[in-house]
Image (cartoon, rainbow, N blue to C red):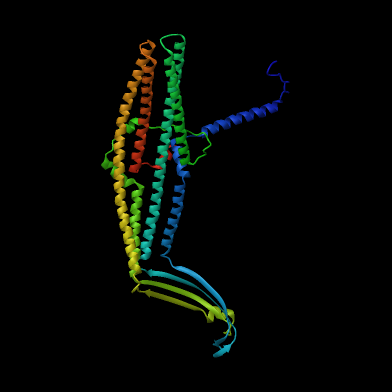
Length: 464
């Protein structure tokens, strides 16, 4: 009996239904194609996503708004403060009646109000130094954002290149597995035909093929882990099958780039945002010390008040009292000369002075750290260039050796073990060259990062 039964023929669809289904089918294919295309990211797009989604950058921008608000507040200190005040009260008991000229026992309803303004004329240059301090604070926060952007870009670059390296290593291992499988089939055929091979050669090749399959699995795992780490940095959908495109990099331009430690150090001091931020911190503490010293100097302020009041003790209408009888204007000038403030000013000056000294020490430590970073990066950069040359020579020699060994194997001069060893050397040479190529890009990116040349905005704009 036939396993598959013949089903009744379904009724034919009308042309309109066919048209709708065809349209939906094409739409689905279009959506699938769009989704696949959308799941491919370039290096520039990855950097753009990281800069947009990174939590640290968002938090630093929020703090920048606070710094800018404090700067606006410092500007406002030069303007007079204006306020309106009003109040009402009811007083019980003996009170002096100005109309009767004697004390009376009655209830007095009172109401008063006025508009006042005050302005600091001199406060030991406190407001000027507070303004300068707030400017440096805002500038320091902006430089911190720029440094955080460079940190994020560097991390994305390193992880992106690690994904590309793992992709290349996986491709090499898959190609090796295909070669081992082909060699296994050839060996099995020769053994079965009773040719120059024995059963031990077959077992040995089976073991080599299984080792190659295991290496493929390990390479796939390494690629998956590196992708997960990159996806976490970018904070994109982890359930999507993301692919990452190869960036357009001129390797020969990198190889021809020669950088001296003096040039790199000077560029780093001039370009790095963390150096600029530390300079802002030093200036902030300097102006903080001047703000504290203003406590030793006199303070002069002026004020003006215009107002009026109403009281039931006056035998006059409300409008006459408020706008004529009880109207008052006051001009004031206040001088405050500090004599002894329980060493509060002294403590504040010493505190800000030591903050500035520590900030200067942090600057010296930062410069030494930059020199160490650059010295290490340049040394690794030069060594990687030599690895490129050695890896290319090793790959060329391994390729020629493999071709010769294959020919010897075909002629029956060589055995399967020798061919496997030479093939393993060729695979290792391919992996070494791939690692050297990406290591060169790693080191060039690190060198640009330590020199302050890794500009995130330029990278994003390059992809648009």
